[in-house]
Amino acid sequence: MKQVPLTLLNGFLGAGKTTLLKSLLAQAHQRSLAVCIIVNDMSELDVDGVLIANSEIVSAAKQNFVTISADSISSPSGIEKLDAALTTLLAHQTPDLILLETSGSSHPLPLVKYFRQQSRVSLRGYLALVDSVMLDEDYAAGSMLIPRLQHNLQHGRRGIENLLAEQMMFCSHLLLTKSDRLPFPVVSNIAQAIHPLNPLVAVMAVPWGNLPLDDVLAMDTYDFHRVTTLIHELEAEIESPSAPDSTQSYDIASQVLADDRPFHPQRLWDTYQQFLGRGIYRSKGFFWLPTRDDLALLWNQAAGSISLEFISYWKAGVLQHRDNQLSAEERALLTRQLQAMPGRFGDRRCRLTVIGQRDELTPFVQALQRCFLTEEEIAWWQEGGQFTDPWPQRVVRLTS
Image (tube, rainbow, N blue to C red):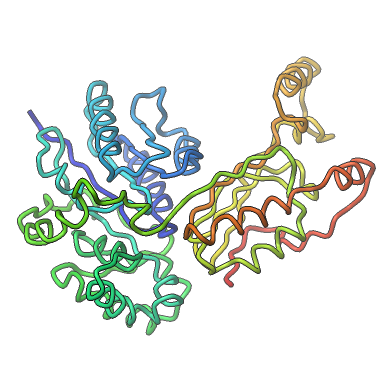
């Protein structure tokens, strides 16, 4: 039985795995290569899965895409779901390549052990993505990562530093993402600081997910023998029956915020400026603002960086456009569809997942909830009232 090549994209929350995955998928599509995708998200709100499915290159209907949400793929239940996903994909496809994007809290050990025993797929690259901006801001250009790891080991505790380091230690290729946001000397210092964690692999700067697909296709079979000692050292610590799961080990939790109301633009701006960099590792999802109520917006925050992206138009917004060029029949159909939706604003809604340190998460989510328009503000807005909107009108990146 011929083994199908599989490339693993692993890395901490917000490291840029989905950006790289979309880039590789687009390159494969341009070359008419058959690619299957598995996406894992620890949150029940599967934002990354939605973004990949929206590419229209892969989908569940085409039987080349599986999403595993509300679970860590490195947990026992996650491994079972991964095995089922591979069984489903390979029952219908014989792809040239499978790309697997893990959740940011996933530990590589269970995955490496699983793929070592596989006969259906061949692990042809474990790519560890590392956010260079996060290392620069939180770990003094990476120089404090190893000392903090050593401190954890000396005191018998596991922290985020353990997960970051071990994701790098298992990898076959170490990719520094967001390097375009830092001066070259800083990026070079980061690479030198983390290279001792895995001295046998090169550290590569990959801005904007610009990794050539040919580089991925040329990757050798993963060297399981190289990490044998590391596997033995971590097995008892991480996989014992009494060990907590990965999110508990690192005190990471997630919450989903769902409401049909729009955010108050100024309150949302003020809240994120206040909370950025305070134990909120990741927040992402779809939302809307009363100042641009026709736009479906993607919120994408990692540590102290934010990007705001236009995804599409809400159907309710399209209906309000004077120049929408819809026929009477199309307008009537769209009106009926919107009337059947549960939200009072048609298809417009806010759905965000927030991931961070457990003790920081609830205060932040409560602050976000206060950003929704009150009933009085909704009534004022619907009567023609306008809000101050400090958010840039174009797609930008803000750094706290």
